[in-house]
Image (cartoon, rainbow, N blue to C red; front, side, top):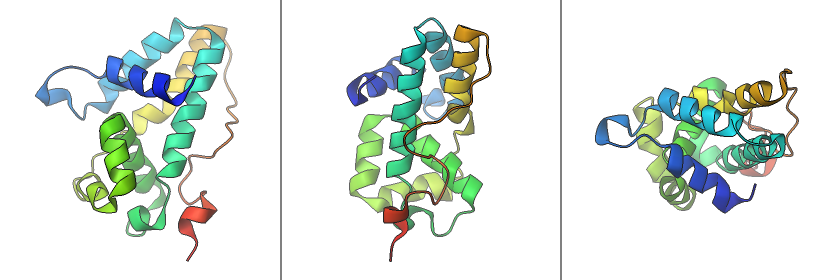
Length: 144
């Protein structure tokens, strides 16, 4: 899965309406359903792109005030908000503040690839993506 396909899938699965803009649980459920009807390589590709997006947001200017878990779930919320928001945050760290200050979290997005993989294969997945999405794993993003 390439980056454009990843972001299109996020957009296609985002629930419509103003009340669901940050409904990560519903987005995660819809994404899981879509991916569970796909070949396993699409699930793996989604995991790679999700990890890459989260890794790119793993930078000092965003997370220095947050615990590891809060930082991870907040970065996931930025991804769940879609490509335009993600790109804006990458270019303007100040755009991250509403997510962090408002405790906008999308922890459920992190489990989408694992749940979809298990539904496709019937097996538990020990995911090993190229980039770690764990907080503080992007050493270049935390260099002083």
